[in-house]
Image (cartoon, rainbow over all chains, first blue to last red; front, side, top):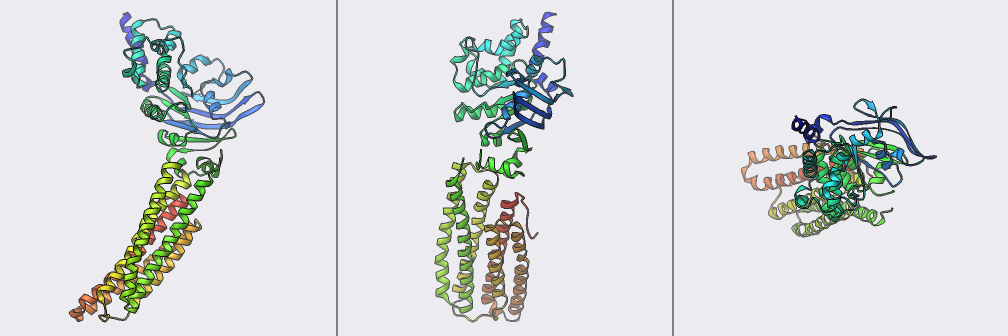
Length: 272
Length: 218
């Protein structure tokens, strides 16, 4: 009986299970503030399910703030607040009674600088989220760690040294470890905030390939300063400027024939 | 962030496309003049000068490649560079047609023409008008002018058909003229193809300006 239950928990964490539970996100008139600074000014944008949506724009345009509104991380900053709706599965994640921790479990995040837990092994880094959620079965943990490292295209490189510190890996590997850590709790959405900006070109391409692979199962939103990266990796692109969404469209159109002059000026490097 | 160097390189590309177009047009004009004047020496000169256009074509292509590799152009810049890449191919082909006409002049030597030259010079005049408007459309980023210029290709095609039928009549009546009549037919064919290449250039200008890929004169 215990084995059956464990099997179902493993299944819940597998990629196949992810497909059934994935969903897109609808941001509706989202405003965000840092104290009196009005950082987002009424963003309405749909993030398509199991697609990659890139958010581009100059520094300070609100793109990272927008990303952090999608998993209720913005409110963790003292003095920060959010107004508007972010709808997943027909439910506003900001409605009263919603547990932000549960939201962050459904909507994972990867940051600019790889940040593996410094005192933990590779294995424990990946297993951390599940352990925190109460998972104790070694069998379940082993399987989820392996699946997540496979999904993050890291398994073959680390399978013989799972007990080594996460920080012993190269920068690119550390970032994939962080992606594996995020995947271990079976998120429906993965937010990537400049995930490759600290990596060399080869590691950058691996992260991009990985993002494309993951997007078969989960929804991805990526913030990037690298125009070519946005053009290469994403299906849809939104251009932010001064806290507003200036233009949103199919990536190919945005980068070959944007409609708004400000988008054209930004992506052709004439300002920003 | 400014991109002065890039802007300068891009403007240099555009200027040289216009220069290349003007040179290709001059070669066509002189090739037809050589035919009118039966001037083989002038035809030889046109054949020799085609090399300069070939060189300019390779130079422009290399500069496009360098900008693609080093500047990662996007949006309007990307469309401009992609269009220059394609336009230079068509202009180079246009110059090849001037060379083709000149070779026909060389083969004809001093043999008498089978008929007075009426429609062939008209074709050339249309091409020069079409070229002038097309280059102006390129310079001024004017898609509408490019479309209007491309529409002139129909008149060139009609003239070519008339030349064909006239020459066919002559050849049927007197088979002794076939060799010389065919040379004029080849000249008309070269001019008609030059018009087709200019239509292609017009299509690239429309894409460069609007982002829309469409065929003109279908």
